[in-house]
Length: 381
Image (cartoon, rainbow, N blue to C red; front, side, top):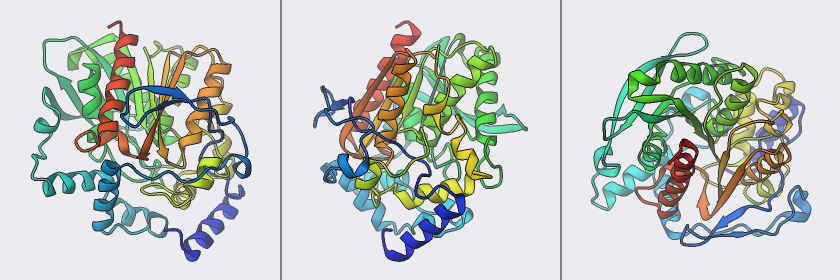
């Protein structure tokens, strides 16, 4: 993925957008609470938030064994570099979730959802989006309810993937938070350019507020969560809900979010060729999602430029081996500056997409439990 042709292609895309290599990533690397090798305890990281890549870049971290096993399995599936494909071709590529399934099969383990996350059932339905109905999956814990509700947005750079690819994270969070999770397939680019995804996310939140009781949910306890591009949507939707005068979400969980348009940061320098997410892919996502370079500066994408005041508590989860690692640090800093309660945890030795891999990755299991505990606290226990 890091050969000269790929780099030249990414550079052409960046120049076309008029933002150099500043497309969709983060800045700053420090002040985070850092999960230790067991995934539980946290310590403070002393790197300077906002330091330029040339000053703050550090040696690339090695993946820990469980994460490396997934990465190796993914490589065996033969995915082509996303940034060299059309969106239609990219959506057909093997995903990290496919690699988890293949690894479980190789280990002789049951791959059925009921075995991987017992006590949670799933049912497909539709919810109302900004321009029509959207496919969704509703994950429901065992019991009579009513349960808190979490509206969940998948990742994929707003271009690829869907709620099925991100089943592991949504299903795991339903278990960890003991909440109904509504995972929504918002419209994707380039068929629907920005801000269609953000409009759908807000519409899905409105739907959850109005229809929570019909899915064994408590309409007074509704939160937002998401991964990567979906992590951005979760925060942006909280902002949009405030501005629209809607009931505030109880909390926001934002897992390795896109938070601002700069890929010249320390984590981008260190993990420019990382897998499964790298810098050329982010440029490709930006090219297909946005209409003009100005879109990248919109506060719905550049969350650190948004008015973040009066948001509910925010939990940020980051992976160490991830170009977007520093986006989380920058978002944490912006939230603190706005006096928003925020906690961020960085997991060592794991890569982007790890959150949904609890079946094979202990750090993912811990991250889901951590996010679930934060949601439970916001919901009132």
